[in-house]
Image (tube, rainbow, N blue to C red):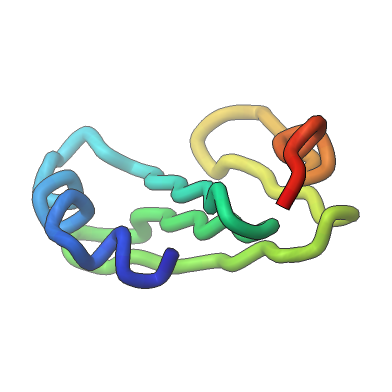
Length: 75
């Protein structure tokens, strides 16, 4: 998944002033990359790769369990 955000889409999306968060969900393994915009051209990245992990969105009051995202997925 590391390459997918570097293939150009994230480069384009992050130029949008309104974009505050960007999330990549792997389909091949339990892995989520969460990018959070701190300031213009300054992004923070969090990586989650354990089924018991949860992640929260910075701009919305939401907490999501990885086991729920990957429910019914067989690797």
